[in-house]
Image (tube, rainbow, N blue to C red; front, side, top):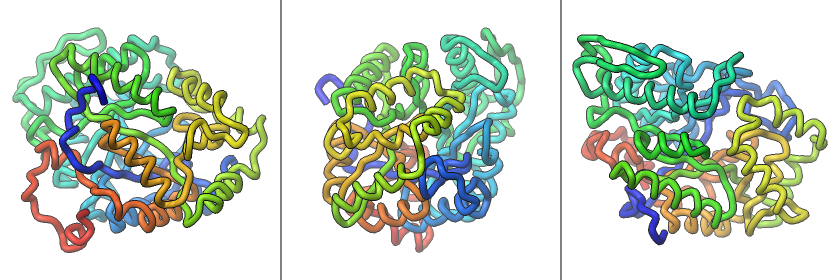
Amino acid sequence: MENIKVRSAHLKGAEVAWFAPICNGDDDYLGHRSDQYKSNWDNASRILTTADQLGYRNILCPSSYQVGQDTMTFASAVAPMTQQINLLAAIRCGEVHPPMLARAIATLDHILKGRLTVNIISSNLPGTDMSSADRYQRSREVIEILKQCWTQDHIDFSGQFYNLKIDNTAPVKPYQQNGGPLLYFGGYSPPGVDLCAEHCDVYLMWPETEDKIQGLMKNMSDQAATYNRTVDFGLRVHVIVRETESEARAHAKYLMSKIDAEQGKEIRERALDAKSYGVARQAEMRDIADQEGYAEEFLWTGIGRARSGCGAAIVGNPDQVLAKIQRYMDMGIRAFIFSGYPHLDECKLFAKYVLPKINTLSLPQELGRIPKEAPMTPLAAGKRM
């Protein structure tokens, strides 16, 4: 952690999150479509409410234009079914007019009584091909308008993409009054890093070797310092945990047993982010992996052969998986978004073998967005760790 400034370095724990596969991201075999695991309300909501009951502190509700359910609609419907878990709702900047987006986020934040976090996405909208600089500039303007809506009584904004002057923003104030929901962000290009450094709260990274992750953290820390800010760091990574290492490695092979190289290439390239710098870095990690697909001890890259985006998993027995997570925490990572295949099964296995051994926390609560003395339900109180 030398020369890496982490906002929540003092915290003796981490926010442990799971993943809601609302974009057809669930399978028993990678690349093998099954109606049992397709994106629908029953399957995705069951995973989310199970994660809540098992003690996970946040859950990513992703966004995709290709398949799946609408993120905000899904989050709004499932919110009253939850008791302690935060929802990390992904929003695509430019998709919704910013004042209307501010209103929608504030409404959901009230439904959740402050248990809302927001994942900022800056990808191209369907049918468009903006430059990286323009996409991140549009996101910057969206964020600045959201913050005006949430913290001021008027909007007065002039930018490259939006020019707005609105006298009264009282209807869009969120439940979280200390600046609104925390903003989670993932991006690797210089404009993306700069945007996160200036405006966002948690910098999300995909799995890479530990030295590469430390390099990303150092770069973000230095950029945030130019704005007199610090950020927290998060890791989005898959996990396969079993009673023994051999069982975990066997399941990794099982996941890939029904896909060939050409099918995997087609799956990776159909995604909107297929040509992004972040995806290229995941491919580079696969290139340095050993014959079994391990880029470093317990970090398996085979999963990236059959999906775009996050392309590696922590694989091992409970002690090995926990030790790997602890190494990340020692580096300064304070938020984890885990997933596995099938999602419900791996959610339960991780909660059985690893989750009880981690001191879990809620970043919005720790950072003062939600009062720590806020009452918890009996179930939530029983799951606090």
